[in-house]
Length: 218
Image 1 (tube, rainbow, N blue to C red):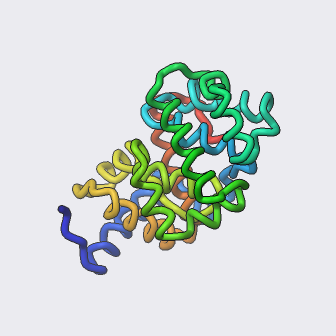
Image 2 (cartoon, one colour; image 1 turned 90 degrees about the vertical axis):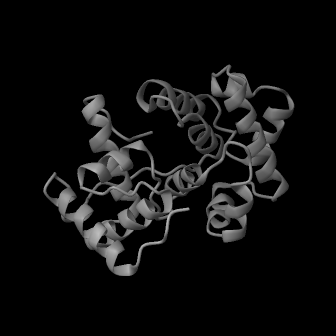
């Protein structure tokens, strides 16, 4: 288990990340507005598909298709019907059983918690108990929960490989999830940028180095 850093160590690391970001193009006042979902089906599809896949070539086209072809799947209750009819593979345009099962499990869990709309999901994600219960689901980790939080408008940092790469470039050695989440959260505060916008900026910056002209948009 990684020891929790003291406040001074955390602030020092956050300042290092903030300074590195400032010298590599992050605006002092970040004007971009990260998109949020108002469609439960698209949100859950994005959250389930994104792990380990190319966002640009795999996730984004499927989410766009869901928004276009399944406008009524904007509530969990509608997704329950879809799952019960074994239509998850068609809905996600995906065949591998792991992600299909994860989607079904997430829908079932939200339904059991009487969560139906995006507003319900947003409120629930603000509950420590809900997050603790959610993380017990197979395949759902802290990154997925924080990622979902970003996508519904909650200020959060979802620590993925891009955040970790950026941290290494900034001179950080500790790659513990909670440590980096706290460091980048404080760094965003030091930069006077919303945390979810800073998360999106880091993601876009590092992703562009692998795939030019890639934007984080829905």
